Structure formats: C-alpha cells, structure tokens
Image (cartoon, rainbow, N blue to C red; front, side, top):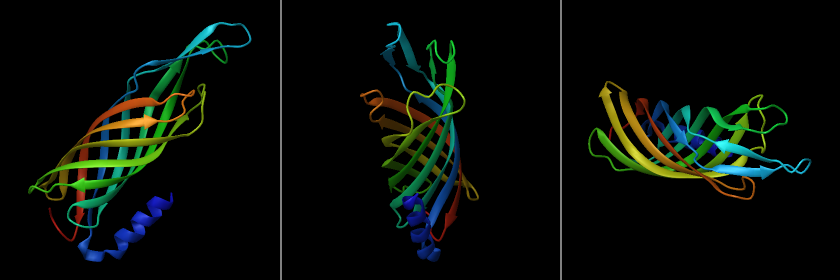
Length: 191
C-alpha cells in the first residue's frame, strides 16, 4: 500500500515529463506440483492440488524516465487450487488474489518496447472454499514486450513472469504466469 501511494505521489510530481500505461490483461497461471498433508485425526493422506488456472487483472505503470518505471499489479485467479480434503467438504475450489509492486526497465525501440521487471507482493487465497493458509509473501520477475500506441494511445502488452511464494506448508511454491492485454498510454513523452 505504501509503495502504491509513493508511486502516485512520485508520478504526480513528475508533471508533464511523466508517462505511463494502464493495462487490462488475461492469461494463464501454472502452479504445478502437489502439496500433501496427513490428517492427524485419522491418519488419512489428503492432497491439496495447485493447478493451472486462468488469471485476470490490471497493471498501472508510471515511467519516471524513458527507461525506468514503477508498476502496480493486481491479479485474480478464479481457481487457484482445489483440495481433496474430507473436511470441510469432499472437494473445494479456492480463488486467489495476487498483488505486487515492481520495478520496470524498458528498452525503447520505437513502438516496440521489450522490458524486464521484478518486484514483491503477496498471494492470498480467497473465497468460500477451504483456505489452508492466509496471505503469503511473494516475489516475481520476468519480462515481455509492449507494442505502444498502435492506434492512438491504445497498444498491446505480452508478459511472462515467474512467481515465488514463500512458506506454503514449509515449502516455496513456484508459479509461471503468461498473459497478454490491451494498454492505454499517457504522458509527456513517447518512447
């Protein structure tokens, strides 16, 4: 939250020299792997399965110089994982909420802008299904390609990111996100 406030203040202080993008995206989040737990009451092994899922979200990037920016990212997974636990239900689906603040390094080549990014945030299971853990710290890194201002301020953006979520049942959960979306650019300079 503090990083978001800092980004808005810093962006506003840059005035006309600042630029940025707002993106709506859709994609795929692949968690991969199983996490197994043994219930203490009856000794039965139950499985919590992280599975591939759709991912939807929005990103706002504030560019402070031509190549350096700060990005806020909010994503939603409608089926982060399902479980085969006998309690509280035979099977339950749980949604996921991803949030991160990232540093972005752009490589402007006219309308084509390859970039790399990395940052920190959290993963939070959400919904009425079984949630075996609460919010967890997450780091992410990756890159992609922006196609800026193809039709007026509207462009496209394609991303591939790796997520690392710490302390999920004493393990690190690694995930891969692939997404694409539509962007709207603004600002005092073009790339």
